[in-house]
Length: 427
Ligand SMILES: *[C@@H]1O[C@H](CO)[C@@H](O)[C@H](O)[C@H]1NC(C)=O
Ligand SMILES: *[C@@H]1O[C@H](CO)[C@@H](O)[C@H](O)[C@H]1NC(C)=O
Ligand SMILES: *[C@@H]1O[C@H](CO)[C@@H](O)[C@H](O)[C@H]1NC(C)=O
Ligand SMILES: *[C@@H]1O[C@H](CO)[C@@H](O)[C@H](O)[C@H]1NC(C)=O
Ligand SMILES: *[C@@H]1O[C@H](CO)[C@@H](O)[C@H](O)[C@H]1NC(C)=O
Ligand SMILES: *[C@@H]1O[C@H](CO)[C@@H](O)[C@H](O)[C@H]1NC(C)=O
Ligand SMILES: *[C@@H]1O[C@H](CO)[C@@H](O)[C@H](O)[C@H]1NC(C)=O
Image 1: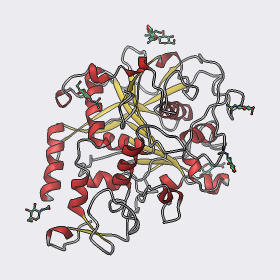
Image 2 (image 1 turned 90 degrees about the vertical axis):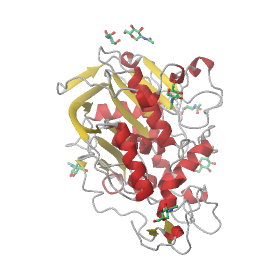
Image 3 (image 1 turned 135 degrees about the vertical axis):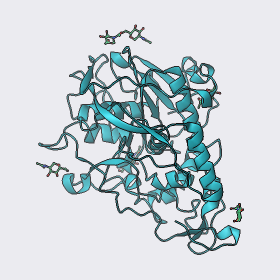
Image 4 (image 1 turned 135 degrees about the horizontal axis):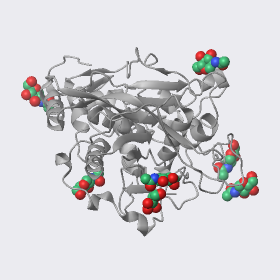
């Protein structure tokens, strides 16, 4: 699905932007709430569905099928609300603090500045649906059948990571045609061999196993691990784990670099970040790093990764919203165990705790859905979850920080400084 790239798409922002670390942070407009951005439907009726439930993560479009909603009849809208964000006063100070925490364990106070900017209204179903479509489009290209038309307001998008030899971080940047544009950076999730293949498969898998496993994807003695931090029994070396996430070639580093480029290209824009699965976790990490509004879909727990990356926590992280449902074992952190579909395919997705706030669709109890990795697909979410209001009283389930309050990742493991002589456990 991701092969046969069209050369016209290959123009990358890489050729446009400048030195990333010097790029200014965006200066957002003053919020006026709530405001509506509406646009008229433009394209032919084309709906997506999952052709075969045994193909869990495939994206597929079939124009002769009808969808659950009349979405394409009415102009889809994007509703914004004033959103309070905290951003580090200086990126230099933020990353210096990370480095210090990694190398010495010392925690520095990072100065934050707070601001109220227009963010997406995640209680508005149409807004969430539009963001989900942008998220889905990160997997594909505008000419392809599985690209969701977004209407005339979003007639401009910039691909990143689609060069024929690119093998990693990929997606699109959507720009609204407003005087003060809204720019949505949309990051692709994992490409899966056979199911939804693509050149990024192996880097995706490496990032998945580094970010979402307890100890370097050491699931059993037969697994080839992605780092060397296992220390026998249920012991895992903490500083080793931090070191393993340091690489500049990993998606968090590439993401911060790209975000800096985007703020450089669109200095006055109102920037948001969205993503599905692995892409969502990177989006959430960028949300903490830059104080930017983030919406993710079906993302495995990224809280542990944020700790291992030593991201200083802002006073509030409510500008990051995770949307997922209880029937998705990847987002729930239950796709584990030697015989699970995830492990069988070589993915150790063991974390379940998220930062930020959560909109959790209880599809299992309230809709009678089963639990299956096929429900992880963003296309499934778009068509079967976001196509209509959640129930008669709530368009979208309530936003809450409660679900994950007492969440604990990797409780069987003991983390400590095992490799360096000391046995002091620190979690
Ligand atoms: C579709 O699903 C059925 C069982 O649900 C399976 O037997 C069949 O091989 C699948 N077809 C494809 C093309 O994946
Ligand atoms: C689309 O759906 C129609 C009707 O269900 C079916 O006949 C057709 O084969 C499908 N197209 C593809 C490409 O699967
Ligand atoms: C943006 O696109 C909409 C829909 O096509 C159009 O009505 C509007 O005039 C455009 N705005 C600008 C500033 O070009
Ligand atoms: C997008 O729409 C605006 C106004 O509607 C137009 O000026 C602009 O050229 C369009 N851009 C693209 C890439 O089509
Ligand atoms: C950001 O821009 C710089 C300078 O053009 C470029 O070298 C780099 O590859 C860009 N980063 C990303 C992630 O696109
Ligand atoms: C609607 O959904 C919410 C959240 O899932 C639930 O608390 C409420 O009872 C539901 N209301 C109805 C009428 O089903
Ligand atoms: C091991 O501990 C020493 C002394 O505490 C410290 O200086 C060194 O950086 C540590 N090495 C690693 C790899 O953590």
